[in-house]
Length: 411
Image (tube, rainbow, N blue to C red; front, side):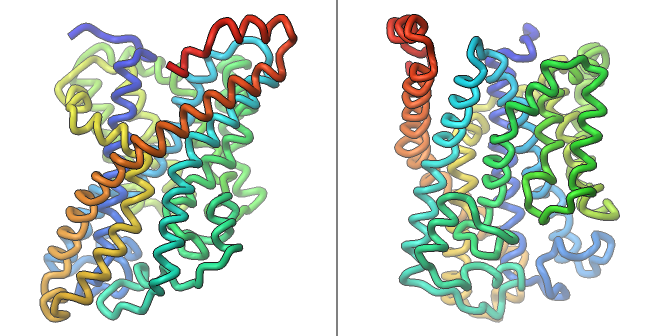
């Protein structure tokens, strides 16, 4: 197969496919922590990996490693840095106009699906109040215990909720969107600190970003903790090419780098001595994985990312990511109320796996609708507003040229 360029459409499509796989990993990761498995009082990822005693417990831990949701989110952040950087590479002219355009497009890329799902969950919680589920893990029982108020709804719609994913979030996964939007405000600066300086400054900048959490000690889900992941994504086009002499020289080497990266990401949560080390391991693994996909010699594993079903999940991954947890929560509660407790306890692992499958099927259909009728219109509206805002910041002569040539992104 002909080798494509690192920033070609084919490579970007494969990055989107990885995003779809990561969203599925998060869905399975959550489902495995719904019903308590005998011998485990908490969700199974809250204990050290080697402590599993029973067969069910050992299998559950293996499945949790293979669907490491924490690693999937780290991959999301590094991918965002890469893709946003490549998008900004196409900018020309007025830096103020470009920065305003960037913020508007990010808002309307993230906002519409977020607002639609938050409002839907808020409406659901006006008629349903979570109860303690005796069969569920303590992790599962932390969610949806607060009454829905106007203030709570506004905080969720504006991503200004503070605290952990269970403290006041209508949709627990949206803490990561708060990180995305927080980083977006600083991303043009991060971009300048990468693209506008020599490569010899990249590692010192990365070291500073790694040191920020230790110095400022922000909350556990503050975007300041994750700045370095987005910067790693910015480093990929240049530094990923440094690996090219390995990953391009042989299909075997490219595959070896890819698999090594996957292993590092998946086991980080179980072996890292503290959360900061885990985050660095996961982000480093994500960097290696994306470098292999971008620069590696084509092989059978990489071509799996071209499969139509994987590409489909890549396209709907954002809506799927937002929809799956509330769907999982609803079907889990229904299952625990409708089926005998003895049967659920006796087959807890199997039930969790079936909940994962059911949640994925239902969420896939809803996500496809959300992508078509919420995400895409929001993206188009963001582009139109970007064009309008850009013309307001142009000189009269430049504005006339822009009106004569509509934005290509509106096609």
